[in-house]
Each structure stands twice: as C-alpha cells, then as structure tokens.
Image 1: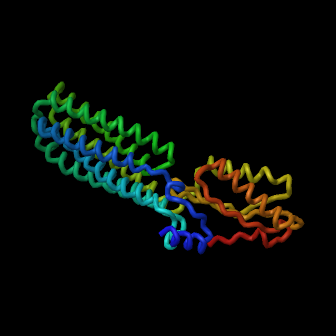
Image 2 (image 1 turned 90 degrees about the vertical axis):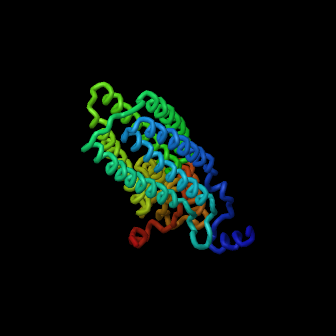
Image 3 (image 1 turned 45 degrees about the vertical axis):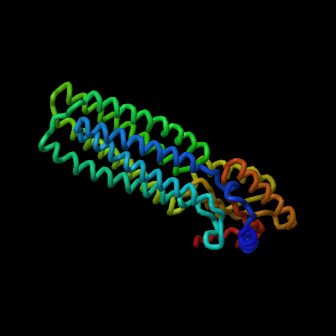
Length: 317
C-alpha cells in the first residue's frame, strides 16, 4: 500500500506525506459531540413528556439534528485524513463543505417539523404539566451543550476546521433555543397565556432556519472555490510587493479556500538577465514566506521574464 502511494506521488510530483501530516485527527471531538447529542436528546425528550410543552419538543427535535450532524462530522473528519491519491490529487479537504451543507439541510428539516408541531398547539392550546421538573431537566441539557460547544469552537479555531466550527455554532444556537423555550414556559406560568408556548416554538423554528440557510450559503461558496479572506490575501500581496525593488513583478494572483487548506497560484515576473537558478531560489523564498504568513497554504508560482510583453497576458480558464 505504501509502495503504491509512493508511485502515485512520483507520478503526480507530490511529496510523500502521512495523513497526520496533512490534517490532525479531530475525530475525538466528533465523538464528544455525538455523546452530548444522545444525552441531551434523552433529557429533552423526558422534559417534553413530563411537561407536554411543544417548545421543549421543538428543542428535542433540534437535538436529533445535532446527533445527525455530529455523525456526519465524524465521517467527514475521518475522510479528510486520507492522503491525496490518483483520483483526488488535492486531497479531501472540501468534504468539510458537504458536512456543513448536510447540517444546514437537517436544520431546515427540523424547523419544518417544529412548525408543523407548533401550529396545532397555537390553534388549540394545551395546559403544561410539572413545569418545574421539566425546566430543571432542560437546564441540565443546555449546560451540557454549552460546554461541548465551547470545546468544539476552540478546537475549530485552533485547527481551522469548519466542520467543528459549524457543529459548535449549531450547539450554541441550541443553547439559545433552549433559553428561549424556558423563557416561554416561564411566561406561560406567569401570564397563564398558553399560546406563548407554541409562539416561542415558532420563533425557535425561525431562528434555526436562519442558521441553516447561513450554513448552506457557506457550503455553497466553499464548493464554488471562494477566495481566501482579504486579510490573508493582503499578507501575500505584502510579501510580493517587498520584492519590487529587485525588479520583480507579479500578476494572475488567484486563490481559493478548500476548508482548512488555502490554494494560491500566481505568475512571478523576474528580470530576464537572472539565471534560472536565481529565479528558482527567489520563487522558493516567496513560497516559504507565504506559507509561514498564511499557514496551511499550497502555493504554485510560474516564473516569466518581465521584459516580454506576453508575460503579462492573463487567460482565465
């Protein structure tokens, strides 16, 4: 297997790397999210059965979405550990966008389920029962989600993983959702207005619809090769501009982001009197500086003579 991979790497001029060198193993965070989702589903379902609150039912349904999303995240985090191969020369980083898109779709389905559950209660309100116990159970579940969300958010930022970050944002939304539901139940107890419970559920549905659309939009942009963030592009341009006193110019600078990996390609125009060796050394230096300034970046440079007018021709495929 190793020998076969070496043949593939030589054929495509790719360095031999282990999966761990390309992507850290983050599956432990997905398992943590799965465990939290199972526990919170049990707790929130119990709270709904005790109180009969459709708001708490909507909260439980969103936790089911959390579980599905966490399982997809686990699969994705395992997939991106695979090294680049003959079919996928650039690796599997973009799989994270599919995970994010799936989560967005599941959130929208949960919102529809919440709406269909809440509307009948809005028309025919039902009194709540054993509210105190239900609130306690929901608060415990919410704190579990909050703790896991903070862990995933920190790991997502540390490892630049949109899968973990999306899962964390979703769990944080779940925390705010639970808070809204609890407020609704409390208001029902204070005011006696039973329709507040389904009204809060509908507001919860609207909130998670917004989250789902946001995740779908992010996934779509990623699959369409969205450029790297402006601040990172500025760092690259600053490095290139620093070589202008040496007579170096550049053009056709293009970037794209594939989840945790950035891809950069550009043409570097150097004085024609330079030797091939010197031009190559400068290009290597530029690539090293870019990789240091913007981590997880793969950069390809093309050397051209600055004196040739054809060097400035830029054809977009």
